[in-house]
Amino acid sequence: MPSVSSPEATELVPVPPVEHPDPALRRVVLIDPRPERRALMGLLVAQCPGLSVAGMAADLGEAETQIREKQADIAIVEIQMPVADGLAAIAALRAQFPDLRIAVCSFHDEAATREAARAQGADAYLSKPLSPRDLFAIAAGPHPALAGSPTP
Image (cartoon, rainbow, N blue to C red; front, top):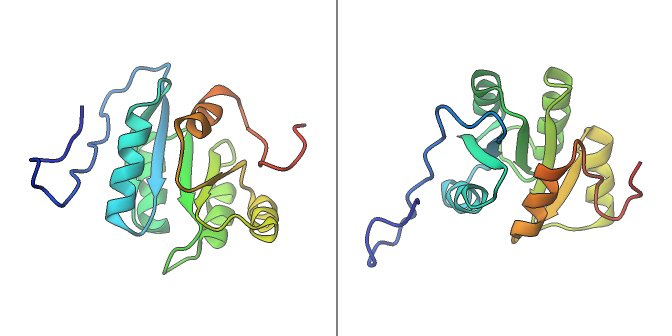
């Protein structure tokens, strides 16, 4: 199980991507510009049955490569990114990977942000801090509805 390198450590050790995951697991690429947040999300995802960390990316370009190479099933996208903002990243990912499940992950939990994410192609909106329950919902169904919206 991933952990910090020592009790005195101040840096998290990132969860290494799984090279040959169980085919029943859904492969997740974590997209966040901050390495410490990718590491924390990776630790949480690694603890969720049904999910495995396939890759971690700081920006859209890295994410596209990771998703393609690792054949990811799910992308968890931070909406605030410096190069291509999260909304533009969602639209680009949806255009390139129509079957990819895209979940937005953000501290910003306003209705307008949720609606903008949905309009760009997001399947789910997770509020930080993440909870295992949120991740179970992502793993459980084909396309969980955005919170606050009716399930089709």
